[in-house]
View 1 (cartoon, one colour):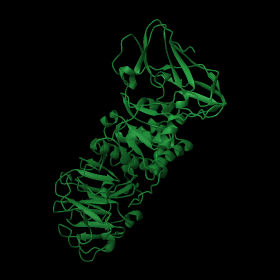
View 2 (spheres, one colour):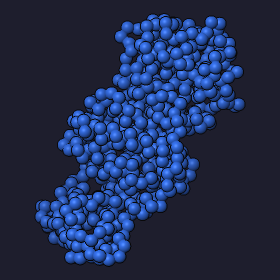
View 3 (tube, helix red, strand yellow):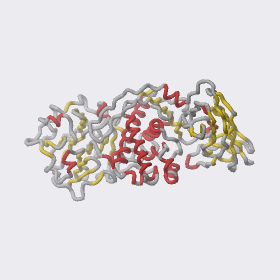
View 4 (cartoon, helix red, strand yellow):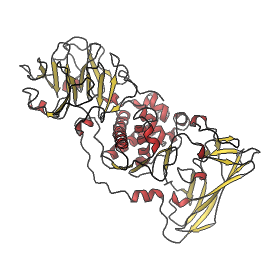
Length: 565
């Protein structure tokens, strides 16, 4: 059918027996007097790498069930030359990607664009998506009939799901309320140690980000903020509930099901391909390009994993890719934005999960402030922790020395004692560092808290909530609604008269703070900060006796934000 420079047609046989290949011919015509190169992506010119057709059976849609391939910018080899007044053609087998499993009347037509094209006989250098010259493709509607025959052919998606093992895993419970559980460890096929570490970190990071996105959208007006509107469009309750539900479903699946990750790729790992998966499966294939991206940031390993999980868990589509296209989709067609995998990637990559709260915080001997949330941490170089350093958050795993596995999933408390040593606790254990950057755990650790932190009440031996050295030189440790104090430099002897209740001894605190602290830290600006949930208070006196006026404040907007896309 005519669309200016190009016309395209689909043609099929009138009748096919059930179980046979359903071969449909695609012809692209160049109606101009000059040669053109066209990008084959998302057209029949490259067979199936995504959904580019509308297939109906007796008037009802047949869903796509082929591979969903995520790619970087195209290479010259992805373009096909269409000569002046000439054609290119190919045949595709619909049964590879569509459930054509019953006799009936079927229709098929193109539902895609030529993503890019340019005039000339010579191939151009690789182009970025931002410079694409898109051309609308409109085809005729081809019709055919399927009659009784053999057993129907299975789609590639069906074949992928059938080879996956049944799931029999129980979630590992988080030790803190309002924090994500660690995910089920993925099964990794192939790959060297570096690839395994990268994928594991991205898997665990995606779990934390999915949890944070779901809960920020559920428990606050987060969906009304600029970031949500940028990627999913104007606020609408139905769409907001859909987005929230998808994040929750991804998180719930990660903590209950085991994914299989193919670290050396698969059949569709061609040049430029980053990763691919299938809808409603538990497998992801990582191609060589995946390992070129950073852990965090705009277009990151964590974001790529999240993108693939939206396909595998919630059945999202690849409507558009990239920052500009996703922004336009949110603005012009919000209903499609909430179904678009890359919109979720970009929302996730621009959401700061630490807005939910902090797990541990301390200023290390190197003068930097470190804050953890679940399996992630950020670093601040400014004295008031207004904006975390570029390249953060980062995974705890691999960046804090050879930690016990439970510590890789998150810290409970962190403190630098007057002896200059760094102490990190998790549950009833702790580790110690003697270097300024907490890069090497001291030999002989972890050790139990019991017997090494003085004559503590039993509840403290089970774990600390927060630990801090105040400007008065005393060490304070909290568990639940109580705290203890140490006057010696190595926290060997609890001061007499302790524990005491937080209530009544830390100033006029909100009730939730009286019940427990999440973190306490003295920043380089000499102010004392205490966090609880998504809020924090500040003290300007040396002993945390009076909460500064105007507090509590939300963490969101005061402790940094992710870079805009």
